[in-house]
Length: 170
Length: 170
Length: 170
Image (tube, rainbow over all chains, first blue to last red; front, top):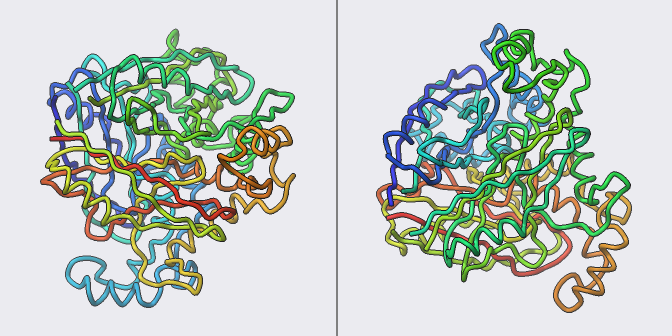
């Protein structure tokens, strides 16, 4: 039985929702693992990101979004509007801001406004933070038009995100 | 350690959202695998389908939907209306239609209107394409009233869909 | 290869959505299993519950909800309002009520009104009933601020819910 775990380091834009199409990277991890039959799990260890399985849409708009990404952005903007100001959502409350600024000082969130990412938290809960894929004959079973995307919903901070890819099988 | 992977072939209606209740099929795969303790992952390799875990609702309406399915349809119709005409969503754009009609000719989507399935893509992203279940004592742990459903959200094409079921355990 | 499966027994409030923060319990199961590299899957065997990965929000309101929980409640109340009366949703229909009261007598749902939990079923489908986490170096890879929550969406019945936690690895 083989277990192989890798981490992808992905740069977020910091001024918009960031989509990383990581299909080739995941395929390469499966190939390198030598697993012929098994499970491939793609996971965000962050609570403001998601992993989805979606078609690649061949058109892109001026901001660089594939059309299906733009449609998903508009759906999310409608359901869970971007958090622009304190008080728009309950979170983050005063105690959360205090903990962020004082207790996590030097580790995360250097400025209060960067914690205005409640929309990103809710979107991440709604879409989930992991997705599972099947490996047969050494190949990811994702069809002819299936692609894997890692999404950073947080539009406040440019930073490096981790995406965990794990292959279990034989 | 045992790994067993099977594919269910499921016929979609082509004129409505199609729900396949696959609990017995999944149970049989678990039983045949001989796994007593492990993980059962049910996966759609298609980007317009979902796998959910839901109760069986004993009433059905005239179109054949169980009542909980009808309630889910209405929720989806409200959040992500059925794509009826080009331009309703950004996707599919002109380049996507061109690629579909020319480069994938003979493989998929023989007519442009069948690519008007943006709603199906977004619904699939929202609900996810996989679900995980636990096996203990050789039995799926899904309670007294839990059922597994494979959903094809695409209402444009009658076709055979694959659902992957994988059991890992001992 | 190690497989370890444990069940957490969690008391639901019965008068509101119940959130159980189970991060320490999951960490302890990972530790006890001895797995250094592997997959940890957290699963609800109930169709009215969800498992999510979310940040802990340090402020709480009068009803005991962390602020991010309150924000998620309000999102759900908007998308899928609490079922207050028969006929509000299609489910549960008359046959479902009959089956619940007669055929499942003594096992579940002693009174008809307790089956008015359609909102809980739909919320569970929308957010999913499982979440996957990665284990490396014997540690859950959930970042500095990631927490695991089991949610019982059903606001009608006080009862003990099961949450399955499975670790597979080496």
